[in-house]
Length: 127
Image (cartoon, rainbow, N blue to C red):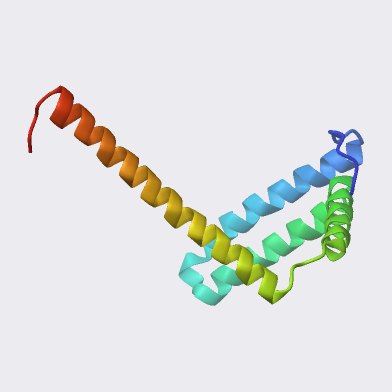
């Protein structure tokens, strides 16, 4: 996968692109509320156009390119995973459910036993 180092934006051009992308998101939100009197279609069109423009600007920056590379690496790694067959997945799911039921019964029984010991035997508080 991609390197796990923390990287900061250092180039002035990248800082400008990221600032412009943020400004476009804010402009898209402002356009959404400013176009409230023009109808829902104009409102949503203004919002979507602004957000699309901000995404284009972001993905042209170095951070955007690194995000795309990370996504490609993640997809490549997921393709390497050996997924279980349906039968095996159902068996494992049944084991998990059985374990949950056994643990629930154990905890309930432990709780009731402790309740009986403390309230009935030690304190003498009969229900």
